Image 1 (cartoon, rainbow, N blue to C red):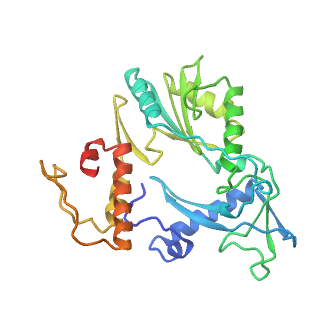
Image 2: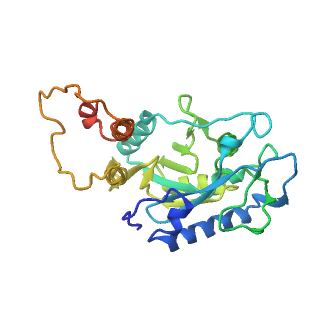
Image 3: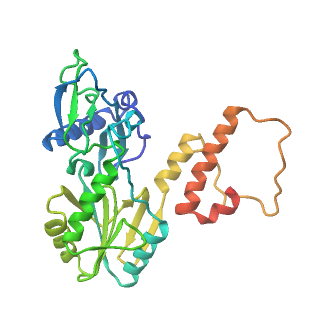
Length: 319
């Protein structure tokens, strides 16, 4: 189990200077190896009339491993030249809450699956070039050598649409139907299996775990590199504790701790009442600086995210 003693790095420089440097280097090496195994790109010399997209490393800690992804910087993409349509599935919290409640009442099994590099399962629909990943350049002295993409890469504007189109085709072929009110939710009428899909995270609930594994791993996703993770522990940034299949605790402990650390509030006192009853706010007598306003907005934004996901009890105090 990974300990979250240190914050996730936000840049390559932070990662290689982190106390967890070796773990992040292994994660980056694993990512490059996986991308090359799936033939995601070809090393070519950049044409004079084309521009290569930038890229950066993105780091994430999972409960059991360190993850690093090489992501294209899509702000350089030109509509009509590098992409045409964009699309991304969105999730209403009500959907997964209702699904979880139904599964608990019926004592169904909860299973989680992780798609290894989801986007690279699909061919890219345009001719796109990206720079070589930092630390893993094959011709570091010649910057004219870049990668031409064969598959979709994280960060491209069209990648979510291409991946969803591919995943939907696989699931529909296996007998699933799309839930009319949420495109990321699929239902198998014959086996009473419900899938919640968001990029590379898939949670399946149903009466028989053996049938779920058979349908998902051997039929629906046989052409997808999928890893079975057992009972879910995290979904959409929410931590999940399934207690003997009878109850489910959804919380954001990791996010809350990172929020406190980010704003230097780790030593703050704990209170059962977030604000004194009857308190009335008064306007400040002095004008706040631009940096103070930005800090305030960031703190309130972080707390609002908590209220929307798992902490409605702090809604009154935050608002």
